[in-house]
Length: 138
Image (tube, rainbow, N blue to C red):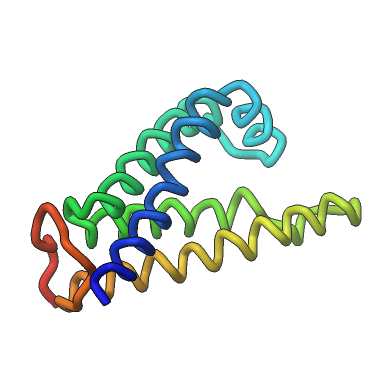
């Protein structure tokens, strides 16, 4: 069972590592323009901060360094992207609304998964080998 948890944890974490590097940092100009189009204030600095944030969170989950805290950090990020960036209800154009709804649903599912990772680690469940013990003990 440890192997399945490890594989799942690594795959989940690597999604955020890749998104932080390629989407936020390497793709900074495009993502900044997208965030600005969604009405996000201080879009430029937030793209950089959120890129570093999710990179570190994904790395923490993947390698098991305070995976509970890392998952909680990812959940915070996903709460904000779900609520403010992918607010499909503000879209007037049907295709844009559908695309934002898809991103909203994806981020909502990832938010749920982040909370599951947090809960499993913080409650002391088996989560595969980790570098550090959880920071929280619930």
